[in-house]
Image (cartoon, rainbow, N blue to C red; front, side, top):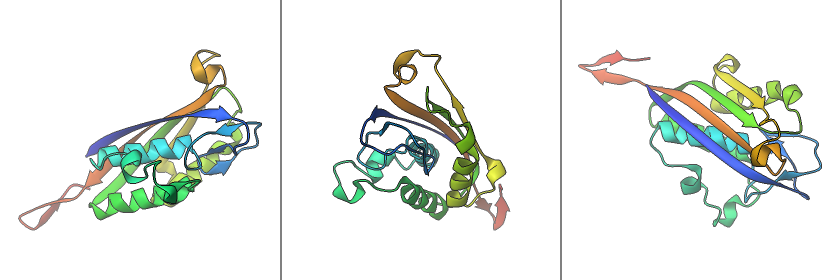
Length: 167
């Protein structure tokens, strides 16, 4: 078993779409970034990459590379999930927290879970997304940005004397 943790943060600015968990959310501001700045999917990718010791999203999708300008983070997550499976891992679960003062995400969370589970090819009951505020404290509480944390559990089959051990 391997555990990974991912964290991401993006600044809120005018003139950008707000995309979280692959869902466009109506809001007067969006997240600034080289790609679509999907803070949740970026945290999920970093958790998966970390658990498999494959670096981070900056290594695989650098902001200096124009191929990733305005990239759809759902496609980037799909690429990361494929990397994980090619290394012989399976995803046990993914747990995430988005830290956002507003907008409220409660109504969007089921679709975020579906996006993550569909892209990663795991059951939706293996994905959890939560949202919380910081009670008006810090940069997220002051509505300057949004951050997200994610943890995941990976399993890898091992073979000893031609017998499979593990999940």
